[in-house]
Image 1 (cartoon, one colour):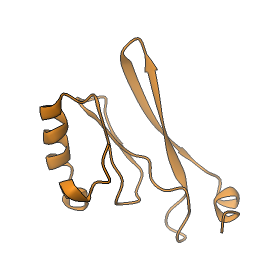
Image 2 (spheres, rainbow, N blue to C red; image 1 turned 45 degrees about the vertical axis):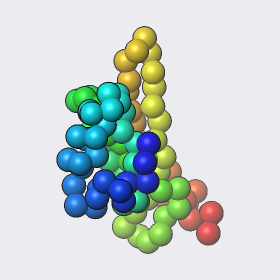
Image 3 (cartoon, rainbow, N blue to C red; image 1 turned 180 degrees about the vertical axis):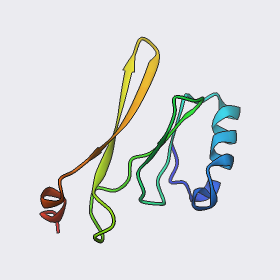
Length: 89
């Protein structure tokens, strides 16, 4: 898990993925871009859960969910309805 800026995630995910593989991580969680993204089920899963507050009309508030079952992972992004996202402001 990392904020993401150390691995230059705004320019791509290669450095983050390479380091995650080197460390033997199953999932690489990151932030910094505020954009929800999932790459998987390749090794490792890569997930940015997005942001909990909608900053403008282009981005919806979101969070990530990781399900673990018998050593298998499944990652999902949950998007909040616009009305709920707007009520936090």
